[in-house]
Length: 336
Image 1 (cartoon, rainbow, N blue to C red):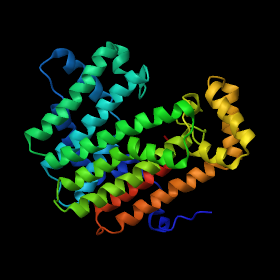
Image 2 (image 1 turned 90 degrees about the horizontal axis):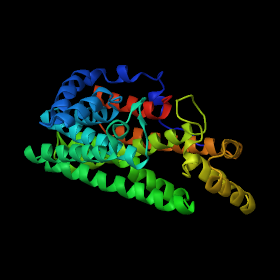
Image 3 (image 1 turned 135 degrees about the vertical axis):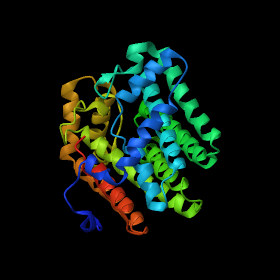
């Protein structure tokens, strides 16, 4: 059984996000105003929609990574704020576009943009947010930050399309799964950490190390998210939602790997042809639980958490490094 080697360093009771963000709370308050400014438009419709988006913002985890990474590598400055805005503009644009692609009418308990203003407007709003990020970077000569974010965006699109391609045939093995989540999810967290570092230092080795840290955190974050699908916590996420969407995640991939060919074909058929049947979905979930899929995925998540801790140990002690350590722990112990 895998044992988390470095966990003894960070075994304190898990903090809330509010407690974790204290060292950068002032910066986050400043950022909120600057972010609102970065979304402004002279078109009333756009202003109404962007105001709606800002009002229902999430936990600010991605800007937190940017600011903690910057403080960990140097002095937080205006470029750090622009890097955080660039990340949030990209992330928000992808969420708006994702809701269109998924035909989703809800986001974080609110109506999605496409539900209120229809798909055509939502796509254009997403494009507007992306263009705002480009303009913000070019206007301030933040070409390094723009390069980091552009590469992340390319990875995210490739990851999404790779997952869609493989989902048709349900032939995702563990190697493909990790390639998908590295591109689709981890690349954005990696860009947050790399942007934070690049905003305060020109040292390429440091920027790369911070990017690697973000990638490890992002992979651990996604595995945790996949575990929620099997009912490990009451998170408000529909049980078996990934199965209903015919996504093969790590717990199911591992369970299928442990079983005989006939049984494997049976459960793949359930996912492929009976994913709308709640009884069949529960049968798949029970199979994963009894086959050790959840335990295996949990241990893999801890491996990536441990790798993130090891990278953090290469940086000098500071309140910013501690904040990053706590955020890493938060990604793997969060309840939603």
